[in-house]
Length: 191
Image (cartoon, rainbow, N blue to C red; front, side, top):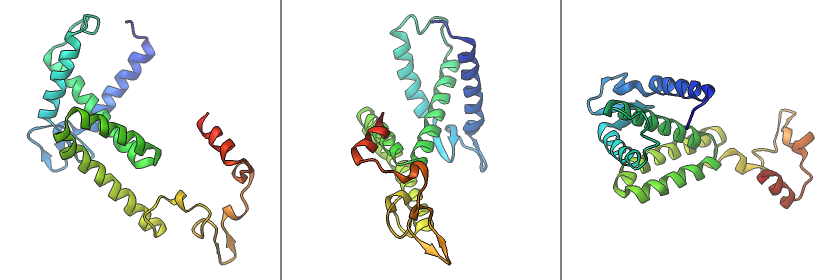
């Protein structure tokens, strides 16, 4: 398989950015022995890297195409660390930004649970619960309720008048007006 120059350039930027985000085992508090990387306080242990490297090596050995140029152990471990860092960053961004991303976290959790139940419950679940608590706390501070703000649509939190100022949603304009049926709206969301 031959890679195009733009794809190689994008991969290079991603690898360099991953290294910059990872902290490479060094945090504000200093060196963390046993840590391959630290992403937003989440530690990726050397044991996790060893396990993932072993699994990756087994996959690579099963395909001569994937091993074309070969890899040194250090190169493969570096690639695995980068992928683990990218996974941590992507999961944190996805879970923190939108409820539909919760489905992604749920699928990732289910797949991880099928792979390694003990580590999923010990590492993944506490991280997800931490994000959930942060999400709910932020909503509580911002709206006075634990639900995401758009769950209050159509209530006094959306439809308000304070000191003569009216909520936009009392008289929405353009596409926000929404005169479609629920079925048509759902179709437009999904297609």
